[in-house]
Image (cartoon, rainbow, N blue to C red):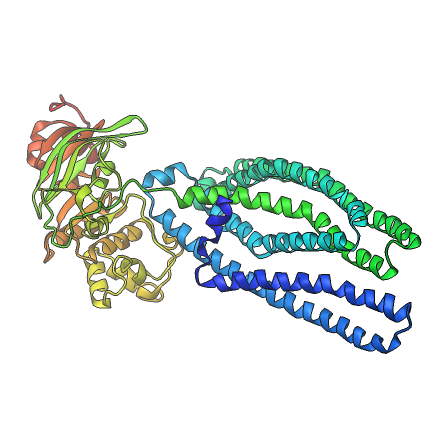
Length: 581
């Protein structure tokens, strides 16, 4: 019941359609129950007693009831359809909002293919049940109860003979339901795995082709596809073991009806017209039995899907704005790392980091891959929270700021540049969609992107492919830098921003950044000495520790990691003692 209540929480303004659908289901069942009584009068009074004057009015009544059933059924189906679409539209919207509001750790724990499956396949299963299965169950229950009530009123013994098989069908349906739920759970889990394999191969197609792993990936997909087939077959075999038995029970009902009814008519216990009612309404018992297996099967798919959707819906992001958040509208850009340590999955990523950065200062971070540079910078906009210590912006713990305001004050370029499948102009203005074109172009000029954008087929209106397909690595980096610069943030984090551009372009970009009108506190993460040499202070991170710090000149004199890196990049053999460790 919890799953049903959760699914119907989006009914909202469409509640009247839900009530209309239920009411029209009642009307439809009422018409179905009433029609056999017209036939009883025709048989008992018109045909057997010779009251032929009543024939035509009764026939027109029967035709009118049939036409009314068609109209009522159409309006009922439309009510359920529109209501279910509105519910699903709201459900998809809220699920998507919950997903994109999660912390990065959430996406490490949930594969993209699984999330896609939940927002598409699982939601569609819920819609199918809301639109067809639940109305069908309601009508079946109403018909069964109404038919049995009428049967017991006419003749209790006759009714008991027909009712004898109903518990058998119910027991088979109960057993079917117990077996189908885990079977459908296995199907949806394997469908998510299959979606993940497809998603990874599409996103990583260049790697696949570069290493000629098409055959390997095809074989991997084939294995997962076979597992999906086996899961589907297992679910279908389970259903096929029980569904024919349930249907067979319903067929026996017709035989019992004819035998018992014939005996009772001959004995004079019921009239031929009353037997006609039993024969007609036996369908009201027979049809629910036939459909019971399908309804149980679909209902178990619904519950299996809802369980997964509810997990996403109630997942909470531990990184959120506090109840009385500090507004981040007047941030100046001072940053302090106070004895900061961070653990992820039990592993120490950062250990005892103490750094003071003044507003407007430019600071560089260098170190081996995996030393914690990117993670350290990501603590400023709270992409993660520290395990110990504190990160302060303008003397205030970042955990006390309004999260949206804090992140709005920080401009970032990422190591893995991501561009949307949209015009270049829209990609640059992603953080400030109403920015005038003049500012967009100015940001592109600062990032040395204006020249190559202008040379594209449609200039700033040129649509780049998914993830920036059609642009070189350096071009994507410059568009990403322009995107970070456009909102004129107070804190600018540049993570390997110019690694794919040539030295001359890098030097030009650095000059333009240094001479910006509004000087932001700038954090540069890079492996090139040329990217960091003009920084006010440079920090070397190794194994999560700060092992060196100073200006370019001081670090060169220290002859540690920075100096060794400089020699390697100049093509000179590295050597000498490393100090400052």
